[in-house]
Image 1 (cartoon, one colour):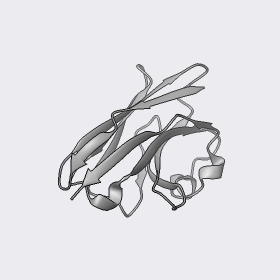
Image 2 (spheres, helix red, strand yellow):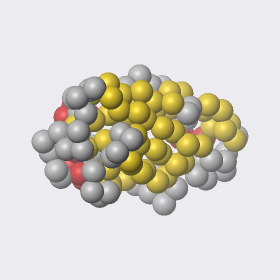
Image 3 (tube, one colour):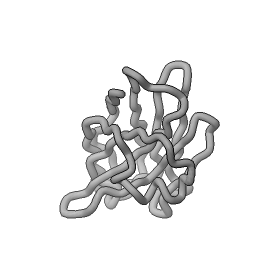
Image 4 (cartoon, rainbow, N blue to C red):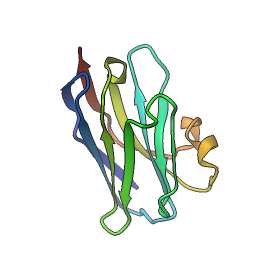
Length: 126
């Protein structure tokens, strides 16, 4: 499974940004897809995950501001980030996992995700 994230960049506080992740290779709808981020000197944080059925889980830090969506046919996942804050500045990664169905548990366990894309930098200016 290969994952390619795109869409990072510079955005002003209060603005919006859309990130995309394209999956390829031996990717099937059985995989859970997720977005993680890592700010400088901080641990990697799971922020949004989605199953092929559209079930989602969000970190409290982004709930109500970010929305994850997925297209199983085209094998991509988007993250619509609205009302962005300076603390959203981080490198954002998309990831895929299989075998664990408890999304609340999975979002907090980066070590359970077997496939990662290269990160894309998001900078939110004040």
